[in-house]
Structure formats: C-alpha cells, structure tokens
Image (cartoon, rainbow, N blue to C red; front, side, top):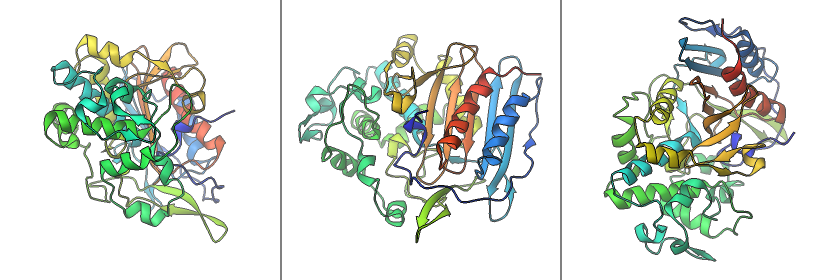
Amino acid sequence: MKIPALFLALLTCVGVTAPAATAAPEPHPAAQRACDVPPALKLALDQLTGRHRLAGAAVEVTDPACGRWTYAGGRADLRTGRPMSAEDRLRIGSVTKTFTAATVLRLADAGRLSLDASVERYLPGLVQGNGYDGRRITVRQLLQHTSGLPDHSDSLATADIEWLRHHRFAPRELVERALKLPPPKGPWHYSTTNYILAGLVIESVTGRPAEREISRRIIKPLELRDTYWPRRSEHIRGRHSRSYFTAERNGTAVRVDGTEWNTSAGGTGGALISTPRDVNEFYAALLDGRLLSRHRLAEMLDTVPGDPERLGPDGRYGLGLITSPLSCGGHWTGHSGSTRAGHNTIAAVAPGGRQVTVVINESPATDASTTAFIAVVDTALCARTG
C-alpha cells in the first residue's frame, strides 16, 4: 500500500528503521460524558504505542450525542516517564494551513482582497524568475496548491539536522529557495511555499504580520488559549509533550529528542502550537459557519483531486482543507500536520458532526506505523459508542 506522504513529515523524514523501545504502559482514559470510548478506538491507539513502539499517542473526540472524550497512551516524556495526555500542547505542523486559509477568506469576506487576483498584485516582483510568474498565479491557487510552485521544504531535505533546528528563516528567504527548484509535475502539488506566500499576502493587505492577524481574526475570537505562534522561540510554553524522531548516527538508528526546534521553516504553513481540544474547537467553528460567510465556506469546501501519493486514493483538496473517504461512508474534512521534530497531528470532521484530533509525539519510521496512525482517524469517526 502506498503511504500518503502528506501524513509524514512537514519536511522529508529520515527513512530508517525505528530502534526498539520498551513496552508501552497501559493507556488511561480521561473523564468521559454520555458515551464510553469505543473499544475499537482504544485498541487502535494502543497499537501505536505498543506494537508500533511510538513514544506517545492521544486522541480527543467530540460527538453531538456524547460530548467530549479523550484517551491517551504511552509517554509524553520518555526521560521522566510522564504519561501522554490529550491536554498537552504540541506543534501541529500543516494543520496551521487551515488557520491561514481561513484568515485569507475572512479578509475576502471583508472585501480586503480577491481570491482571483494575482499574487503579483499583492506581492509585486516577488514570484519571478526560473519560469515562475506571479502574474499568472492567483491567491486561490496558492490556497488550493494548484499554483505550480515547488515546495521550499524539498531544498531542506538533506540539510544538517542541528543547523536546521536552530536556523531562523525569513519568509522571503523560503520563497527564494523554492524558486530555485524545478517546477513540479501535474496540476496539483502540495507546497508549503504556497502558504508562506499566503501569509505574505495577509501582511501586504493588512499592514500587520500575518501571525498577528491570524491571532486577531481566528485564535483570539475563538478563545483558543493553548494556541499560539512560537515566533523566535525554540521552546513550547506550558505543559506539552516532548517530540522524538529517528535518525542515523554512526550507522545506527537512534531516537532523538526534537522538542526544542525553530519552526520558522514552516511559518504560516506549519508553525502553530496548539492542543487537540483547541484544534477541534477551531474546526467546529469553521465548519459550523461561525468564521466565514456561507459563500466563502462553500469556496473553501470546493475541492480538486489531489495527488494520490500525497492524499491517498480519492483524497481531494479545497482551500486549506483535505477531504478523504471514510469506511462507514462519506468523507472526513480536515487537515494533517507533521513536523521534522516528531509531532504529528490529524484533525478530521465526519458528515454527522463527530470530530477527532489524534496526535503522536514521535514520527512514524515505518509504513506500518504510518498506516496505523492514519487508521485511528477512520476508527474514531466510524466506531460505535457505548
């Protein structure tokens, strides 16, 4: 089975076998309301920290009939042994893209920009050269990944890890890196550079840094108290899970702590820190129509076929939103996010309104562990509750 690459790292993962880990401790359910955590969901999450030996995993589900329930297993911190919790903060990677897209659409609702205007209109002269022309790329195409622009992340795939985790990138530096790369093939190409440019469009239109504007228009109104931009900091404030990835050192696969990391390479396409609860609240507000007009939300949900190697079979992409089939019928809507440092997140909403955000604090190092991580989403949205 071909593993969707979008659910791997924001940057290219180190493709080596994970080292053996100690057996995962018994997971612990958090407080529940009307329904019990489905046994199938417990089993699916337990397998991540047991059979697949990932450090920790947690899930929060909200259901119209059952309220909110969480479940977690493994360790948030391997050094201290602190259990994983769905209340912990973590880096949510490309889930950030939905926040950025929603802000662009809110500005369109306010008449501050046009989705069908060229990038050149808002960022004159920035996207030029090597066959790329900002006059022929629209804001909508940035959000939809149909701009034809490459991903600057590809230029960092072989960079020294220690340099990468401490280097501070400026958004325009990332765009310059991307424009030196050859053009991607096909009409749809997932590129974080698109969302770096979308952030620069926000800045151009509002006169304020994109991170500040996204906070003002999305994060603060929804009172997402655990969601914030790290800016220059390599640290995560407050209670958080540490993150781990596998690297090769002297020919041996070792587990590396990647918690302290400068995520400026992700920027407005991947730098946010949040919690499962905040992420669920954001997607609920977005899809309930609390953030956008009906017209703009419909535009956001208007999808095009994605690359099957990125989104899986029948995966589609809207404006900052992924849709993917469910085994119980219909499609989930949301986004995935992952970081080179090890945190991985998938947020998804089913047609009936059940939501899930599932997180792990170690990058999957095998196809089997990646498949198992993605499968938790389907289980959470399709399993029957008690």
